[in-house]
Length: 147
Ligand code: RTP
Image (cartoon, rainbow, N blue to C red; front, side):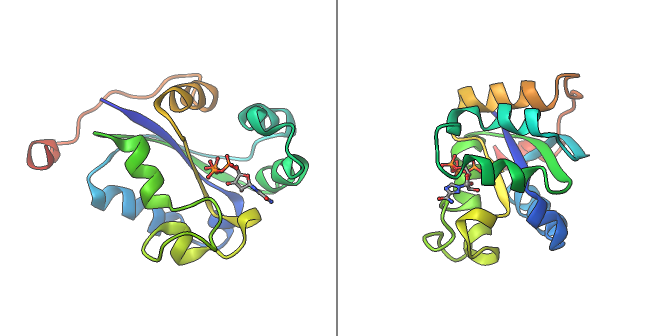
């Protein structure tokens, strides 16, 4: 079953959006497989965003991610990577549709509340980075109704 890595960024935590965001993924029918509340250091944040290291906003992005605790999660389900990105909305909240998390709760691209893996391969890399200890195995009893 497909898995994705979802992170509620420091602004999402500080604005009290943790419950709302988790609720949206739960109500969709995805299964929560891993969750940790963690403040990461600069080298870790730079590793997570290594693909963006040449971008002019890279330093500001790293400062933002290390500015407070984040909620790191693994969610599982059919097409969860692409559907998760749809639930999250476009990167720039000015272009995120209403009804998406960023469309409903964010204004600025530099404070866009949440991260979601953009592909199955990057999800696997990000899950390995954030959950090196592995994640617990369990199956939600809801699955027979959803699939
Ligand atoms: P994320 O990785 O956080 O889910 O975001 P994304 O795939 O939708 O967007 P990506 O292009 O990978 O950018 C990662 C994060 O960098 C910040 N950003 N700032 N100031 C800017 O122009 C700018 N552009 C991107 C955002 O926080 C974005 O989510």
